Image (cartoon, rainbow, N blue to C red; front, side, top):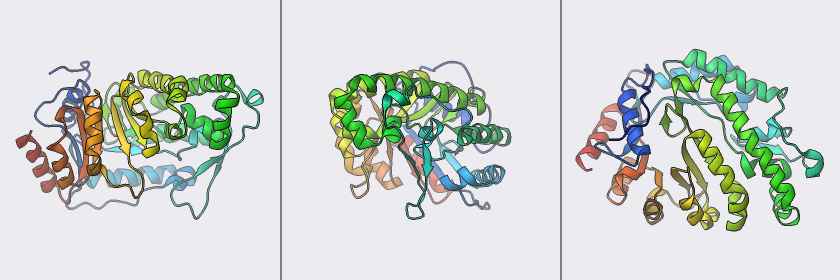
Length: 361
């Protein structure tokens, strides 16, 4: 079995078998398999009680130390089976990076656990270059949050990178999707410039968060685990553009981000983005595709043909579902090119599912 590098993960109190899990992750990245596919399964631990989680609003406005403490309580109350790793996500919302560069963060009591930015770009010429505003209060809070979290969670829980809506998602957030669609046709050279700024912002953001969260020391976890770097990348705006536009602006940015991050899950959002299937399969660096069907459009078990097409095209897939659903999908999918996520009612049930995968691989 090929391994990537010789660095061993630091032990985690809430994941005593992390070194074994890391070996399966390494095999997954190498397109290989040890004795079963990667399976991330969680279950409640008997005798422990979790604490209330935090939503975007509380992470923006609440007490950081209290949020971190509750996350630790919940992590201790969770069994992390297979390749699941305890991790804390402190994202402030999908448009947080737009706020870092100058947009206003907006909330509504009717919108549930989400928020959005208010577009501010009226004239690209006057708004460029795009830069992270280091004096922005939300930016400063994020860096401080990572520093506090790693101090309290080191040796217990890993940190997850923020919501990485960069590349063209960032432009859509600060300009507005409809106006950006017109700009792509009317002033493409200006979008070239804006996208170069967006790509520079990604590297600056990644380096700052990586340093504040000491990820090079403890490892990365964002649906996938790695000591070298791991994150989920995305471009939800891709559902609104043609394959030609994707190839001109988005794919070069995603591939550059992937080279920086190392191990990537691509968040492939909604049926409108399926038009880009061939380009995503031909892309460099997007190791795993994670398709999101959208509300009312079924679950992953309903998309087996798509997943088989992705695997045939050379990519791995991230798949979630109930234990029964992933057992069904296991009969159809290549085990070395799939990463399953599921849950169980108890640690014993989770361990039995892992044993089932060994017996049936």
